[in-house]
Image 1: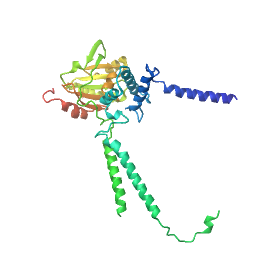
Image 2: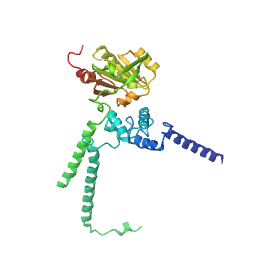
Image 3: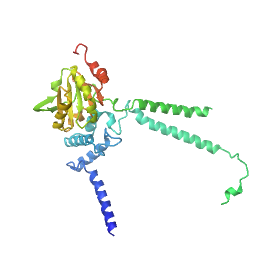
Image 4: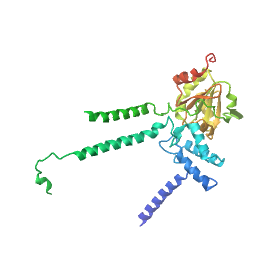
Length: 149
Length: 177
């Protein structure tokens, strides 16, 4: 019984640790729920430049926290989402956006996956067609011992 | 035989795309600054070791200068320090330090112990100016021309070769000492 209480205590301590770390960086919410929603959306759009595939909302590194502060201040200053995106791109380039605009330099990012998917579908289609067209040519007698359990 | 040509062609095309991607990958040394050709971000920062003094971008206008982003917490900054000291002896252009998210005392100690390559060091304790420059990791070094436009950004420790090729070469002939 005591072991079980200890176990529950340990698990709750661990869960508490997880939930605390999730809110460790920006404890202070924005003035209005609308602003908070925009903050949450925007910070998920920007790449943490020091991290592998994390948004600035998900990262604990100092630069991400500085950029979150910047987004927060711009929202409070009355900037629109488009203006905030523009300031980020002006400093860091399109690479900071997880969904970069379709431009000459970013075209392959958008086109290549679609192209590869089409090629893959074509290859799969060809294989299925070939298999379907196959005719059994092996007319050797089946060894009954192999079938029986 | 022909049934192998198409898959082979697709494979080669994909390998080609990936090869170009790997060769030109946005790794630390080739990542271009979004500021190239644009006016240097405005700043108004305290000067390290001189209480009450300020350094602004306007004060540096009119001649080419270099901005080196560093911090005492940055290991690679120690690696490039000898190079910076050698560069500063050339007196080719002001080398301005941007002490990024650091402690003033630690920064002053660092310069006392290792030598000071900088004409002046601006203190960016909360990292706002570094963000405006699009800095994502120290050390980074920028070249700003006499018109106040950012013309080059080097990410990672400065080397003699990069300094010659990308910084000194951008100074108009005759302006070099």
